[in-house]
Image: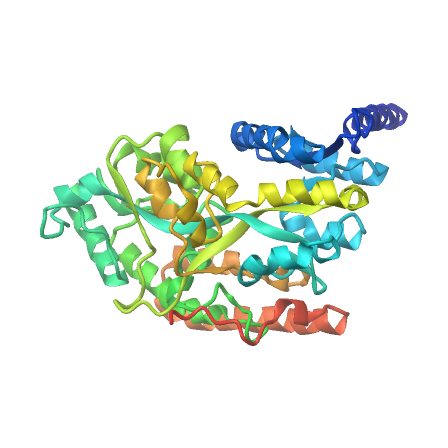
Length: 457
């Protein structure tokens, strides 16, 4: 125990010494203000470094500001950032993402509107701001920087091989659930145990979230939590579960699905033996680098229940920057760098180089060199998307199964007659826990917006 404690003290001392050398802005170099920017995004280091160097040679040179980027990959980022906050040696600008409420509550961040010029700057972002992510207790601490989108990926070669084509003889992407089910059935039937229409990784604990709720919400109108009503409505997903069970009973799922994790499912799709799989924006890199696809594959929006699409597609804000306490102490220089990071030309460059998907379709107007990767372009088309609002689930004490466990169990059991009752029970348990949390002091207003509506106009 003593040895562990001494090791911790040594680590903390070394960390604080390092932070002192790399932390607050240094005015010693001829009055130049240094603004430190920290990020976890190692994959974007080259573009961010180059862009901030351009800032230093232009705006920074003119105004006496130097921006310095520090990339800390993996889980070490959060530990390093929190040690820096605790020591008062944090960077002026930090990537904080979904930790905004925690850091704001600790007094480590400063609302953008309290920075001179901040109120005017945020006007272009207001429709994309996410409660309990960008906004906390009515104050705007961060702005969306990049997003994740959901899609269906499909094997074009298997589609053509099985005659699922358009008038030009090219692979015809499914638009409705009926299209999807029929394509899966044909591919599986003709595949004779070698090729299957669909893969669902039910061995992955996150399958219920990423393969069901955040993908098929374009047929339901929400992702399980109704922001307008301030209540859980998982029962609305009964038709989705029943549809997937129909595909299972057709024999169209790749066998062994109860033990398949997402990496295994993605590897099988890349081998060319699977017709379709649900996917997120990060999967472009997976099928390009991690498990390079051995066939021609396409990307389409998630098929909907009916041909007439009623609701927008899912989009999650997955990156944001905040101005810290140290940044506020030198707010003029910090805000210049902050504005540069959020400039649409900067965000367009990050999209062009396949680093980040844009949160705003207007950013595409600033793209000078369109990426050749058609899959990346398809995931980056964010027109007609809604921004996910976090639900209060992390504050609830749920009795019994989680919704994800219930969804997985229903899909494994394959009993359509049990779906409606099971999801109704889930709603009852979640809404009871929500009421109890409100009684204990949870502010439900931060998770509720009566005007929230994702219907396509």
